[in-house]
Amino acid sequence: MEEEHIEAPSYIHIESNDFSYRRHKRQKEEDIVVCECQYDILDPESPCGDRCLNFLTNTECTPGYCRCGVYCKNQRFQKCQYARTRLVKTEGRGWGLVADENIMAGQFVIEYCGEVISWKEAKRRSQAYETQGLKDAYIIYLNTDESIDATRKGSIARFINHSCQPNCETRKWNVLGEVRVGIFAKQDIPYGTELSYDYNFEWFGGVMVRCLCGAASCSGFLGAKSRGFQEATYLWEDDDDRFSVENIPLYDSADDEPTSINKEILLGNGGSIAQYGNSDTVQNTENPGTANTNEFAPMIVEQFAASSNELATMTVEPLAASSNEFTPMTIEPLNAIPMVARFAENGSTEHNAQDSHVTLQNSVPEAANHQNQTESQNKALVPVKPIPKRRGRKPKRVVRKQLDIPDICDQLVSSVACEEILYCEEVKNQAASEIDALYDEIRPAIEEHERDSQDSVSTSLAEKWIEASCCKYKADFDLYAAIIKNIASTPLRSKDDVAPKEQNGLKYLENGS
Ligand SMILES: C[S@@+](CC[C@H](N)C(=O)[O-])C[C@H]1O[C@@H](n2cnc3c(N)ncnc32)[C@H](O)[C@@H]1O
Figure 1 (cartoon, rainbow, N blue to C red):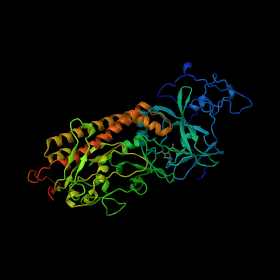
Figure 2: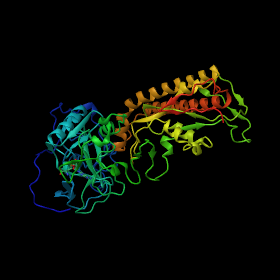
Figure 3: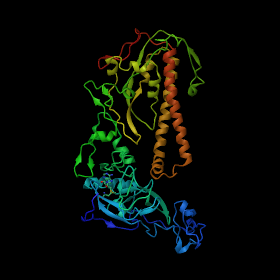
Figure 4: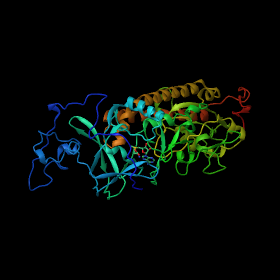
């Protein structure tokens, strides 16, 4: 980091937020909370230190109401009690702010001031700035509805750079009825150290910037966890290049030209984008030569008696979702009739770990051995775009494979068996829609919670989310259990009854040993 006397960037310096988009709130008298503190000359902690009830709830005391009067220490935003900092030119990351004194852990460093604008306006401005060629982004998140834009007007906090392993953090404080964002030291920061915080969710769909923080845990991009970033980057639709990350302009903050995306960085350490071969067979480049079995292998369900005398009988418990209609049953061994269940490709919304088909696949004995069984089986799969592994984020929406339920039912003789599977599929779809709807409702709260490490997800929402997740897991499980049970325990159509279907000239269903 070099300290140069280069012309400072131009912006309008302000020491408190600018409200042009809406009026500044006026604190009502009934909303003023008065703490219990009383100034005691012998106790330096007495005037509104860390035992002050207002301080403990991230609320500043209101002048004229606090009994400690001028001694009140809980008016740091109002009195601009900042740490000493100075501006420097960094290598590759533009301007940055360094500590111009030793800063203690927990200390208020500076307020992030700018124009208070709506979230929608933030998104609009962010895109406009990109169009204008502004590559440095200064918009940060204030709450679920509003943001602070320090692009044109701001405090010196606008120069604090991002780090994936930062020495500062943002915290929200209630000051005279308004929420304000402060930068606080997470640890002791020695004189001369560059200040940084994690931009976390601060990305509104504008320019993507490669992170140069140098931390071992670097997530590769600025704002990689943001709502805007995830919406813009993680939509994967087959055959639609608009949604391909390759087409998103990417800036290195060191240079001005957008470059094509660096796939290695996108994937983080150890990850790599799978290569498409001529046959569209997906290869796992971490272990060249092996198929990426978790994501692309067919699910193979064998009759239980196919290769083992030990599995002579098996009791399947009734499915709770449909327990009134389907009674428990004992499965008798049948002749071996290997069956490859075909996956159809379908876009679906995915939250957290809902890959129960993968779990199931891994739990089916012999399944792994069959995954590369024949080329024709591999080719029976519709090729899908690989989902790159990226650290520290969960994909919102990905293209994934689904079982082709009507196809499975086609193979079953018993109409009761089909009904059970179709019923379970319907329950599963309902559970999926419910969790999708709920996710949109809960997402702002989750983001606020994750961003500020504050407890802003309401208990009732969290409970609803947990309940919906459990329903979804259960519905997934019930569907797969119903498929296994019915394939294993009810007769399948004979080879002669089923005209072999072909796809790409290849059979995907083979009956008979
Ligand atoms: C809030 S500004 C920080 C001050 C900025 N460096 C400047 O010169 O005005 C955020 C911008 O700084 C750059 N930046 C901040 N942290 C960075 C990092 N870790 N790696 C690369 N660029 C960074 C990016 O261009 C980002 O959009």
